[in-house]
Image (cartoon, rainbow, N blue to C red; front, side, top):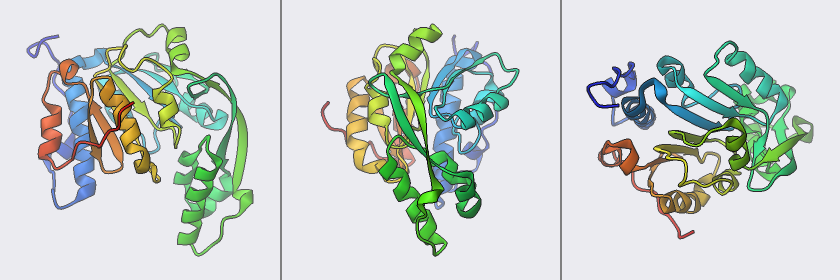
Length: 270
């Protein structure tokens, strides 16, 4: 697709009113910039793969742009209740393919640790998005949230669900996906295993968004090293990593992110 043939990008309002004194606005603008660049490059032909899609809406960095632009997707979510909500979100949308499993570098079964509905009522619904294969990580998230309300962590707030675990390479093969444009990972502490579960350099990926919230910035160098080894430029945008493959996106997005003040993420050798 040439620039002259490319469809007009949808409205990404954050790009029109960036307030550099407000970090949150800058983060939203960076996200919209990435989505606009991808839309410019791919139009409605864009395909993205999302690991940890939850219900498809809550704190989802791609949903709004994907719906507006008509992008194709492979959305992966392990929790059966959240997967059911994901199915409702994308009901009747044949451009979205949904898979109910967790992603790791080895197949099998693992316990998914997650907050109960009762805990979400007391501590806020956002904690439902903190489900993790790492029980200690979830406990730390809930403990911090409980302290904000002057409470102690209640073990009854934590539930466990046995889930199937598959390498991303197997899921992509089963779906018949040999190339895609955008990778989104929100695996709540399991990002390294996701990145190692398929050939990161072999699918023509143009960009990746790896969420490193809840303290995962300590693993930033490792994630960045894996991405950089596959040819990506990697920037830290708040607590997340934005990876851009300059030879595939055909836009100096890295330079723009640098001008916005986002530094390249430190990376360690694989």
